[in-house]
Image 1 (cartoon, rainbow, N blue to C red):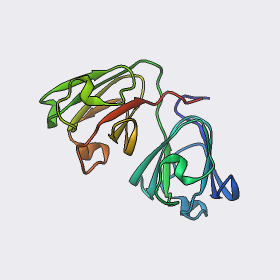
Image 2: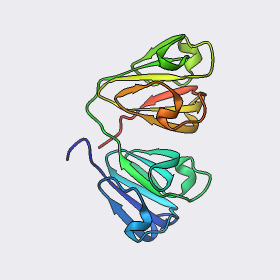
Image 3: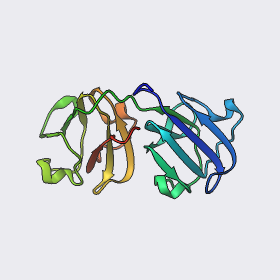
Length: 183
């Protein structure tokens, strides 16, 4: 299996019951596949996926790695809406990210190679990140709150000069972790 693919199953009912939708690649609109936008449980058999509560890869992001999620609260959702998803591109195991307090890679900077539950302990003086550079092989999840809580955003290899580029309306980022569980 390529590190760019995986397999995810969405179920309308809790505990893997009801109609299901099986995907191994991008899906920009679940309704186009005959599946309603109500998802109450998910099983990720392989890979890692970023899912969105609206079609066309918009809205709240949820990062789902290998494992079982018997109810929507397990992936930190507030409701059972889900409209699109795509696999997370995993290239290998070399992780490196630079976080900048200012837009366009300015201001205070912190570099990470491992998960960080509280970014202010790593040199950032504010609780905001306005630009990001992702190097190496792996993808990262940025969280609005410490200890990997709150809204989450996926960033993969590349440069993000403002929060809008990782689909955030806010620069509040207080914790970060690697997407590592993809098999």
